[in-house]
Structures are given as C-alpha cells and as structure tokens.
Length: 80
Image 1: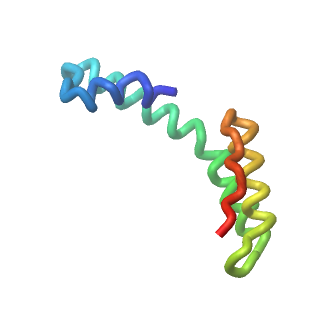
Image 2: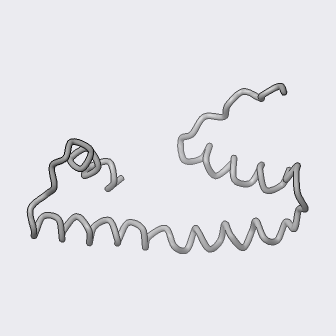
C-alpha cells in the first residue's frame, strides 16, 4: 500500500522534497479514490442490516469477512 512507502519517512522526521511530496500525495489520493466504490458498497450493506445496538451479528460477520479476505486473522473471543 502507498502509505507504507512514505510513512516511515514522516515518522523519522524526514519530509520528501517538493515534487516528490506532490507525487506521493497524488499517488495516495489515487489509492484512496480506488477504494471509494467498495467503501460505498460496505456502507450500503451495513445500513441494510438495520441492527439495533449490541450485538450487531450480521454487521460483524460481514465486516469480519471482508477483513479476513484481505489478509487479517480473526482474534480469539474475549470472555468478559
């Protein structure tokens, strides 16, 4: 992801020079815009579940599925 490429430079206090910074900003903006359709689909889907309060079972399963398909591992359940 684009963020991974430039974030370490900012964290170390090193800012890219003028045109390089502009190029990185444009690249990041394109990457974010590329996710717009998926983000809108996710919002529409979550809204369609119309779950009230806790527990949001369908919403949780839907979003967890998206995360898992994108390489995230599920956490073990928390017993309170």
